[in-house]
Image (cartoon, rainbow, N blue to C red):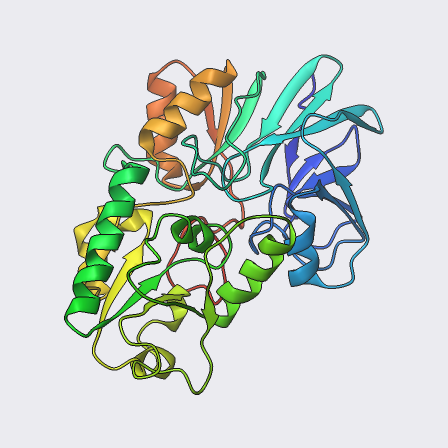
Amino acid sequence: MADVLTFTDRGIYCPAGDFYIDPWRPVDRALITHGHSDHARWGMNRYLATTGTAPVMRHRLGDITFETTDYGVETRIGDATVSFHPAGHVPGSAQIRVAVKGEVWVVSGDYKTVADGLSEPFEPVPCHAFITECTFGLPIFKWTPQDILARQINDWWAANAAAGRTSILGAYALGKAQRLLTTVNTDIGPILTHGAIENTNAVLRGQGFTLPETTLVTAETTHKTHPGALVLATPSALGTPWARKFGTASTAFASGWMALRGVRRRRAADRGFIVSDHADWEGLNAAIKATGATKVFATHGYTGAFQKWLSSQGYDAHIVSTDYQGEGFDQADEAEA
C-alpha cells in the first residue's frame, strides 16, 4: 500500500488529495494545524484550518484565502478524506487525520495531553501511522501540575510586589501567555502586557475566551505608574530597554526548557517555571500508545534519541526533517508555545 503522506522540501504532502500540511514553502493548498508562525506561514494560495484557528491566522497573515472546518467534520479532498481533531496545544489547534483507501495517517502538529483550562483538550485519534513532534522527547522533561504551577507563580509575584519589585514573566504570545493569565491571582496587583501578547489577547477575547484585565505597556508605562505589577513579555523582549524601564525587577521564564538548570543560568533568569504547551516525555508516550499506530515518524526535537526509544518499544519508527521550530526562547513573537 502506498504511503498516505510523503515528506518533501515544501512540507508534508498528500498525493491522493494534492495538498500539504503545515508547509514551510509556498504551495497551492495548505491544511494548517495551528496558528504559530512555524506552522502557519504566509504565501499559500489556499488555507484550511479550524474555526478556532482562523482569527489568529487572519490577524497574523492578513488577507488570505481561507476555509474553515470544525473538529470531527470529514471533508473529501480528491481521493483523501480529512478531518481535524483537538491537539490541546493552543486554542483551535488540531491534529489532522488523513484517510486514503482505508489507510489512516495522523499529523499531530504540536500537542500536549494535559488539559490547560484554555485549549480544547487533546483527543487521541486511532491511526496506522502517526507523525509526532518530540520537542521534549527525553525522560528528564516532566511538567509541573497546573495547580502547583499557579501557586508557584502567584507566590513569586506576591513576594516581589511586597519587596517593591516588578515581576517580569517571559511567555509566548499565543497560547502560553493566555494560559498563564488564567492561573494568576489578580488581587496581587496590575497585569501589564507586551504588545504582541495584548494583540493576541484581543483576538482570543473576540472569540469568547475569558481573560483577566490586562494593560498594554506603552512608552509612559513604568514601575512608578504600576507598582507591584506582573509584566507578561515575549521572551525576546527580556533584557532589552523595554524591560529595563521597569526598574528593580525579578525576571522569570515559563518554559519546558526550565527543566534544564543550565538553560536558566545561561538566560540569567531569577526563576524558571517548568511548563510547556508541548507534551512532556510521559505525554508523548501516552499519546502515541493511544493512537494504536504501528508506524511513527518523529519530527522537530530530540528526534534521534526518541526514534531509538520508539524502536526499542516495538514501533516502526522513523525520523523526518522539517522546518518546525518547537519551543525556543528568542523568537520575536510566538513561534512555539
